[in-house]
Length: 177
Image (tube, rainbow, N blue to C red; front, side, top):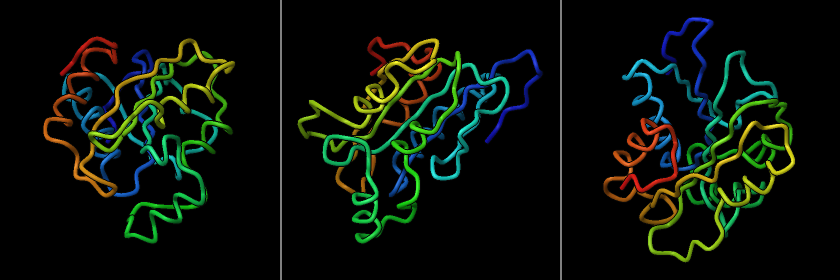
């Protein structure tokens, strides 16, 4: 999904890693809300994303599922595929993509999905922020965590509404529940 934009309008690019469809659903909800309100946005899957951002991206929103309190690895992606993940790949997840990304002057916002009710003292978003530290980003923001009901989901009730509100609020870190 991409909203039409003029060269003067900055693009919000949402890049997600998703294995059971939950994280991509959150990213698509954000982009749809932005597009519906005239803000150009696009969604890309991390395993298909290139190391160079398209021209005009001012905000990069990156989402990933939490695997063992961190971003996925080839081993955890392989395990996810072994239990039925339809969108799993062992080639490139957010971890690898962020490591190769050439993003200069872009605002980076990261979010994740976590199992509802689990201790989320560390999650994928925390590790993504750590990986981005020292990069050439204009700003780095640790965003929200969105709950899922188990390894394969589904998303917890209300999470897509929460994602849309957060996006429309400019990805601000106040309570959007």
